[in-house]
Image 1 (tube, rainbow, N blue to C red):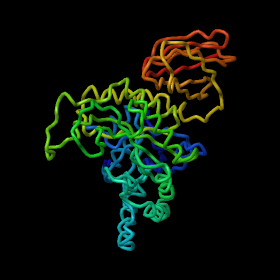
Image 2: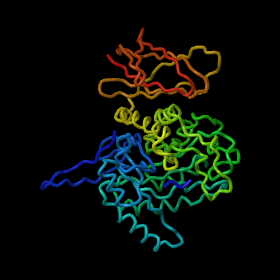
Image 3: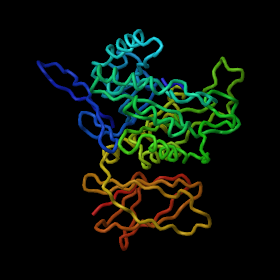
Image 4: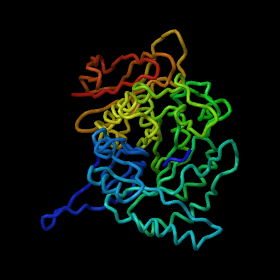
Length: 405
């Protein structure tokens, strides 16, 4: 599928005029992206909002990165304090010199714009619909990478992969990028007509787990591709599959098959991706979503919550182990409750999600000096008794705890 809070730009004031300082990007040893030296959680979108103030609306919703197509859009992103990323393509090895000149021109046209942070090459190069052959060979990107990096050394290169292909196949593309992403869109009503990107069973993902918790399974898979040190971003669903049918398709859209992710589903998928080890999230498909709409409001509600905790989520791993004891609920525990621990601002945070299709009840232990547990965005406080807390999760539920002394 071709894809076409806020981190604010730094401004230097000279002679009464504001001159934007270009973004300098790198990444830390755990894959966290560094923006002008600051550990930064990426909250991105392939599309700006459909409004008369598209980038300002994105910034207000917590997005800090939006894909743009031209310098005029970058100007709008800059004014809103949103970083931009742009696709420039890759070499054509059969027309090496000609394509290198075109690639160089495309990079030179945008590399000095102060909103630019990330440069994309080509989307999903390893994936071909219903074929085992790669659409574009990995050596193309290994040769493209040094050309772009020489022209724009302070930017990171981005490559999104489809959710299929072998880990060994995808690893071969790492030499052509800094950031690896993976798209997975599991909210699906079933019974869809055959369409681009879906397997014959009607689903995009190909793992055994067909629930929305497959997002975490794909994080695990992609971490095998990237290793622990390279940035990994997960591309999440902001559309209904049925709305991808166009006027040129043989079949018409069916109203009863238009299924957008709910707020609870989007919240789970976003936080599970981050709990499992993604360095950020990016949304695809919002251009196919009515705006304003409840579906768009739900996505922005999720990104706003993630953005409010972005500094916490971008903090280093404190290396803390939390004890976990499950209570009998009358059914098995498969993946169960997944946990991410972060320390920030004198508090300890536990980001948790239940990856099971059944509810769970868990006692966490090992809280030592912590005396109070606030459940964020739920208006609850849990008692810490004998260094433990106990809570319940609905299927695919999320709880975020802030421990206080």
